[in-house]
Amino acid sequence: MALTGRAAAAAVIGALVVLALRTVAALLVVDALILAAIAVDLALAAPVRVLRLTRAGDTRIRLGATGDITLTIANPGRRALRGVVRDAWQPSVGARPGRADVSIPAGGQASTTTTLMPQRRGDFGPGRVTVRSLGPLRLAGRQGSHQAPWSVRVLPPFASRKHLPEKLAMLRQLDGQHRSLLPGQGSEFDSLREYVVGDDVRSIDWRSSARRVDVMVRTWRPERDRRILIVLDTGRTAAGRVAGVPRLDTSMDAALLLTALASRAGDRVDLIAVDRRVRTRVVGVNRSEILSVMTSAMAVLEAELIESDAGLMAAAVLGMARQRCLVVLLTDLNPAAIEEGLLPRIPVLAARHRLLIAAVADPRLEEMAAARGNATAVYDAAAGERARSERARISALLRRRGVQVVDAPPDRLPAALADAYLSLKAAGRL
Image (cartoon, rainbow, N blue to C red; front, side, top):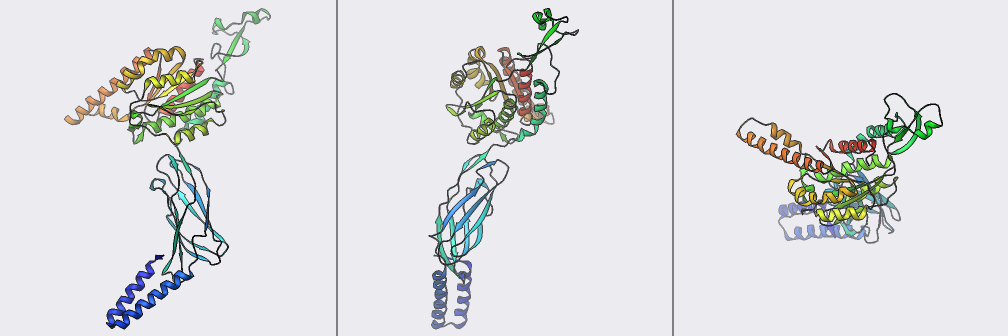
């Protein structure tokens, strides 16, 4: 049984009547009338246990976007149901509205729509659906809860998608749709053309030239069907926030742009997420589905407040990639973690693969280093300058070992990583 605000209002009115008359008879009559009205409402309210609930709607929602879930309630009983439905979700899902009035005829059904605006990534399911069936006087009613299973996966936002048209145009220029091929560029043979002054003599095809009057040179196209292995570091450094966004989320955004670009270029992209254990793997997915599969796999990843195991990371890369490929490690240029963990493994990895490390730079360091307003600002400037010099030193150490480094603020990292990939592709170094 559930009482409504009307029942409370009726009780208040009855109390005023009793206080005005100040007799026991008045008290008994008022109480009897209120109890009788409540009993009638309960008797005439439609039963709620027989209701059948189903759901339909979105199963995937990007973080920052909205999705709709429709709850359908079927009433197989012989009485019309008038009441309220509460569809409970976790607070971080941002479900609106929380309650809805419904009127369901006997043998009919009605639907309510809940709009979700999630605040974080991951898998979410609804709580119990509570239905309150009210009587004609709306003083009281029957109430029951039902399970209506559903699952919504909140995907990471793909904010860097805005850069994709520009990067695809650059890719088309490399790949031949809007390009002028240069001799010696790339490593896949494309065609022959006549020699012109300025061409590299090493590109001359002497055998073809011997059969013709003119000297012929080979032209090349950037590589296709190469493999790219993206490694996400999900350790403690990935949990740090830069410009209000966790490093892991910025790394995901950069990985998605690189995946979209590389799959259009005809390259194969795989993903592994590691800290003290392998959190997820995406391997062997065809190019038309890789972006969707990778986005879904990233949705449930969270940074763990533990130090990443660089040895496990290196072993996982070597175990997954038997042939030479481009390994893109999205991590932080933390001096201690790099020098003690990753740096000793670089020679083994670099001997087998081409390495590219992408890191999220904190723009706050630039602001701190430029501050000179007072004594506190000067100390901040010293700290910022030291942090910048440490990152520069680590980057130089990595580059001396043959590792390409991309260190950029959150808003520029995805585009910078895509540019680095295109540069490698254009130079035939994948």
